[in-house]
Image: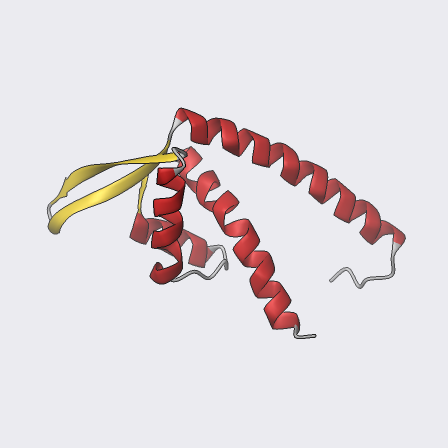
Length: 114
């Protein structure tokens, strides 16, 4: 089994949650989202992000507005909708439960805790 493949799948599974977390704090331009995810070492490329943003918008979890830019064409800024905020709240609960379960299992096991 390839550990890099498993790590990649774990990151993909967390990407939606992390995007919603970022947009909960403030609206953001897609390039800003990519930069913040890279800074957090959750590597993502535009080809991954844009379809996900579109899906989240189609699910009414995100909305966007065009904002004029002094450095080129208008930019699309994404933000959470009311439904997105409620969905994020549900994900927060799920994350806490999952994290508690994993920590409980780790404390019972022999996995190196680096």
